[in-house]
Length: 86
Image (cartoon, rainbow, N blue to C red; front, top):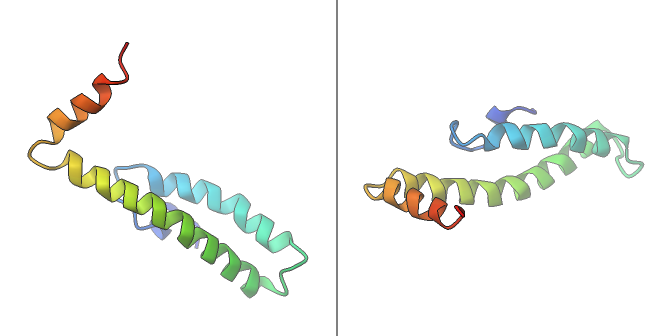
C-alpha cells in the first residue's frame, strides 16, 4: 500500500520514493484522527489525498521525461541549468 511502486512515476525520477516517504506519516495521521470511523475509511481518505498529490507530480515528471528523452533533450537540459549557474 505504501511504497514507491504505489505511484505511477518513472523509476529513475526519484519521485515515487519521495511520495512514499510522505505517505507513511499521512497514513498515521489518517489512522489517528477521530473522524476516521474505521481503518477502511482512514485508508480511503489517504488514497484520495495521495491521488491528488500524485497526479500533479506525475504530470510534471512525465513532462520532464518527454523533454529530456527527446532528440533535443540534452541541449534543453543544458539551457535549463544555464539559468541557474552564476
